Image 1 (tube, helix red, strand yellow):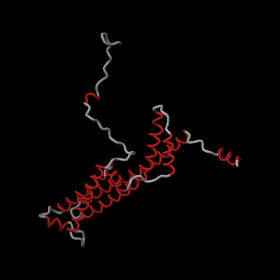
Image 2: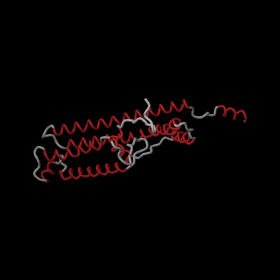
Image 3: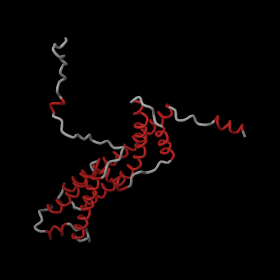
Image 4: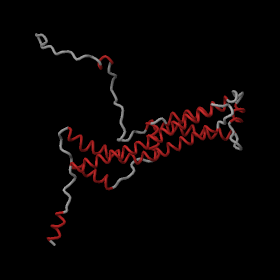
Length: 247
């Protein structure tokens, strides 16, 4: 029995060394960077789709306005995919911030690293989980990307296209007649477009009130504006009382 306990004690972990923690930090930074690049890829695709669809639709008077709705759903699909990827990116980004704030910051301040940091890191590494929901992730991406602008441009371009091409509509009845998509009446298409606009506005409002996750950078807030001259004011030499400045 004593021999077995001694054998187990000899294989007991000595804790997380600085070298091991450095490798863990590098690995988590690499993971978060790779997932960040995947987020940027879908954002770039959405911008390309928006530019292509709007340019193609307004390039000819005979081009149907329904192409804009197809482009809208393509961009919305990219947004959903990017929101799902962001939920996984948040896992690795949180670990990076945990190591920076719990280990590197105390070292930079010449303070001891608390035991809570190692306990929290052990829990995070042993049980990785998604911490934000799909709707929250959609709102976060609407805050930080060009999706609101892209979706808004497509929705507005659909109205302009239906009303203006091939010539301006005389009344609302003609507008609805132009809005039809094959066997689908124009009134149904317009009502569907209106529902999309309401959902779009609700998501933008939700994105404006929801707080950002701790992994996102925030703009500094000031209690009062600083005059521009203060920022570029030259440093004045210190003049002692009753004396002159030394040269």
